[in-house]
Each structure stands twice: as C-alpha cells, then as structure tokens.
Length: 411
Image 1 (cartoon, rainbow, N blue to C red):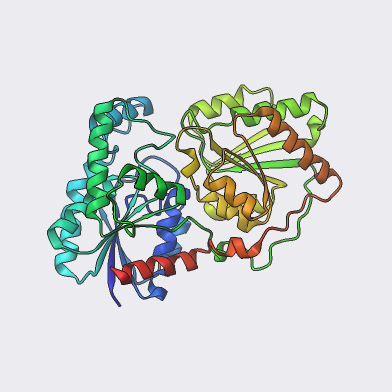
Image 2 (cartoon, rainbow, N blue to C red):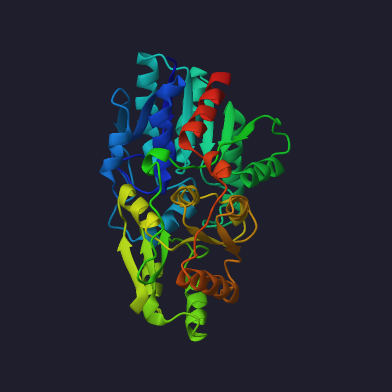
C-alpha cells in the first residue's frame, strides 16, 4: 500500500469542525488503498478538546507530534491577532515550521512515502509541504479548507501584506502537484487570481458528513415542548455573528407571532467574547441557552433534537465561497435548516437538497418571516422536511475519501 505523509497542525485531540475533514480522510484512506502517517503538533492551540475523536484513527496509523515556538498564551487574543497580522503574516503557528520540516524530513528519509498532503488552515502546513516537496521531489496535494486571500472573516492590514501573502500563496499553488478546495466558488476565485494556472490543476472535494456519526434510521421527528432553534459551531469575526438573527427573532416576538414562553434559542459551540457579550446583553437573554463546546457526538445529538437548525454564513466579501463543514451534518440530521447566507455555495446546497430556506444574512425582516413560518408549521405538527437524499449522499465522507485517493493515485 502506498504511503502518504499528511501535514495537519489541527488534529485530534483538538476538537471542532476544522479537524474533522482531515480525521475522516485518515479514517477511510486505508480502505481506499493509501496508508496515512500524520505529522501534527505537540503543542496545540488553546481551544476545545475532543479526545473521543482519537478513537476514529485506525490503530496502524502513526501520528507524529512536533514541538513549536508559539506566541505566549497569556497574551490577549487581540494582541496575538495584531502580531500575527502585522508581523508573522502567515499565521500564528509559523513557529512550528522548522520543527515540522525537521521531523517530516526524518520520516521521509526513514520510510517510503509516495506523496505529501497538507491542509490549511493554518497555512503554515503548506509551507512545511512546500519545503519537503522541493527537497524530496515528492508529489504534493495542497488542500484549502478555507481561502487565505479574500477570507471574509480575516483581512490583511495593508497592500504590502496583501502582496507578500499573494506571493506566498502563488508559490504554494504553483509548486503543489495538485490543489484541492472545498467549493466551486473557491476554485473560481483561484483561477481569477491566477489566470495562468493550468485548467486541470484544481479540484473540488467539499466537506461532508460521516454516515457512521448518524443512526442508520434517523429518529422520528418529535416536537419539542418549546419551539427550539439550534446553532452549532463557532461565532467569530465581525462578519459572522448572531446580530441579525437576534433582531429577526425580536421582530417575530414583537409581532406576537410567537409566544415568548414557547421559544428557545440554543448555541452549541465555542463563542468569542464579543458574541458572548452580545447574547448576554440581548433582549432575548431569557430564552437563549449557551452550552459551550460539546464533543462531536454530543453536538450531533443536539442537531437531531432541534426543530430548526440555524446556519450563519455572514455577508462579507468572499462569503459566497464558504462551505462550512456543519452544513453537511445538518443535512444528514434531517432537520429543517434556516440558512442565513447570500447566494453562494452554502445557500445553493440547501436549496438543491430541499432542506429548508435561505434568507439574506443581514435582513432581520426576512429572518423574522422565515422563523414565523417555521413556527406555524411546528405548531400544527407539520414542520418536517423531506430532503433529496441523492443530493445528500454525494457528501458522504467515505465517498469523498475515494475521490482524494483517486487524486493521489493520479499523482
């Protein structure tokens, strides 16, 4: 079986949506003919932990963890963010680069690897692979889970920073043997930015869901005692926030379309301080419940128990390319989805799968109308979606891993 060295700073026991894509590839690659070895970090960033995810790593897969020089943990987030944007440029994990290159080189020299895979964020992962690919002339597949340039949740401070970042990104895109992105809009943006890029250089493998995380037969829909809206995942940055959702719900309540004591809004996941303060100071604080981060298995249970699942993409430039991993798990959960997004990858999928409604993310009136409609159906016991299962099955992690294996075969 050919072996692939996978460079992934974000990996279990780190929790959250960002680690699932790589973890599921690792889980299913051996049955698709490739043996993965993972190079990750010994010093994980502050954030949620989900050690149960480690159980999904096949027993014969090695995970090597390299040390890193990181910014001091006692620094406030704003200080770390400023240093990263203005000084480090790439990301705050650039101090992992020399150790990751050293340990990866030892692995390659002591083993037989047929390919290298790197995934971002962090973008330091690709710089590790760039150095290895140049030195050992191994085929390299660079996977972009999020855009680097034009990322709607993170902007570069000056035109000089933009120019330097684009120079680095270009070297990654052109040096890699092949590039994978998670959505067609991301692919389109890359070809707009680099028109001299070969037409067959970039492939799309979206995020997805693992059927093993969901019961073979989804539980019958049981109406909650209170109409329950559930949001799972993080809220971060100025573009992705709950402001307009809260305004829409306030509007629905003021219209007396929904009795206040018959509604609850649950946030499952890690929220940044501005989001926590916004929810705490909201006029809806009495009906809002925040659980904090939950292990993945518990988050899935929360999805299955929702009346409506809320997806917030945001309205910033570049948001049309965002194809967050949780949308696929929402689809697998079989619950009604309210997607707050402008036209783009996420909105198109919800409509294609006939899984719910999409509304502009910054239009409280439209949000209120959608929630009122859902509530009326819920009250009558008919808030049930019958999504297009053929559409949803296209995003099964096992199928997507087969696509990745085919790309590795072709390299």
